[in-house]
Length: 205
Ligand code: GRF
Picture (cartoon, rainbow, N blue to C red):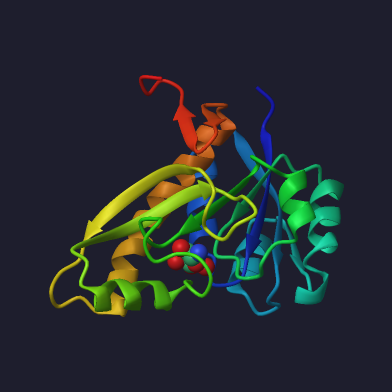
């Protein structure tokens, strides 16, 4: 089976990107990351790409609309993985890649998501709300924010003495398992979108 060509969009340290690269390195994913694009020149995720000999591109936020699509098309990318990408995507781009953009969000969507909920803000809101469970969600991207069909979720217990920082660390650990698994499922052709529902073949569907 041909290897699925993956493009990653990043803004930060790239630990989620690294978890996908490591899973690919272990032979667990029928895919290869062919380009990593960041809206931040200083994103360490770009350095992680370079270390793996992967094309690493800084794209100014103003160009993040058509520029990203042109770069991905130029690299013949099949699926786009948002691994901590903070710029809102161009609507035309999302339409053109419908069903082929995967995002990871550090909460159990639909809780603590949407406009303004990113990074530590998500965990601070969860701790302040007093939830007993939080976690991570991997979903397909639609024209909304964190609103596309959910692929996988995993939960973590929120302890009484948890802070936004300690919760963030717990959730990040989960993310590093969830994102590679979602990418593995996509690259093995195991995901089918039926309206809001993502069917995973081999899972009683
Ligand atoms: C993760 O918490 C992810 O859920 C969110 O951005 C963060 C990215 O972290 N979208 P990293 O850059 O992958 O370390």
